[in-house]
Image (cartoon, rainbow, N blue to C red; front, side, top):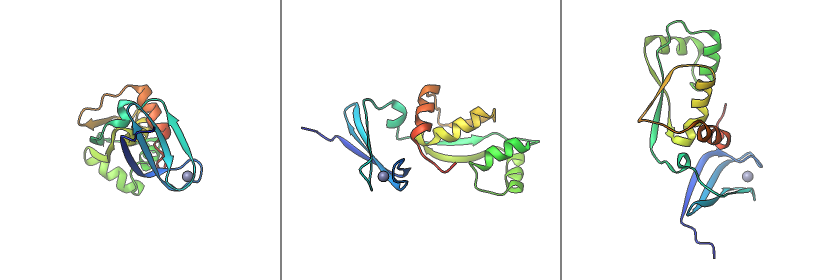
Length: 144
Ligand SMILES: [Zn+2]
C-alpha cells in the first residue's frame, strides 16, 4: 500500500507536459512523485535532496554595482521586473533583494547570477552544493 506522508503544492511550477501552472510533490519517506494537477504527467523521484525539503524562505541579494554593464543589466532584468534605468538606479544606490523564496525556487536565479559573475549574498546562510543547485534549477520552472 502506498502510504502518503506529505503533499506539497507548487502552484507556481509549470508542468513540462501541458504547460499549466500547478504541480505537487507527494513525499513518501525519501521517495516521491512530482505530479501535475491538470494532466497525467508524473515523475517518480527516488530521493528528495535536502534542497527540495528545505522550507526556509531565503532572500537573494544582488550586491551594489557602480558601473553596471549592459550584459549585467540583461541578466538582472530576467530577475527584476523593472526597466533598465530603474535597475541601474536601484543597484547603484545599494544592495537589492531581488528574490525571496524557498531553497529550490531560488536556485535558478542564483545560477543565473553565478554563471554571469554577478556578486550576491543570500540570507540566511545557504550552503547547498552546486550539484543540488543545478538540479533544483532544472526542475524549478520559472519565467526566465
Ligand atoms: Zn500537466
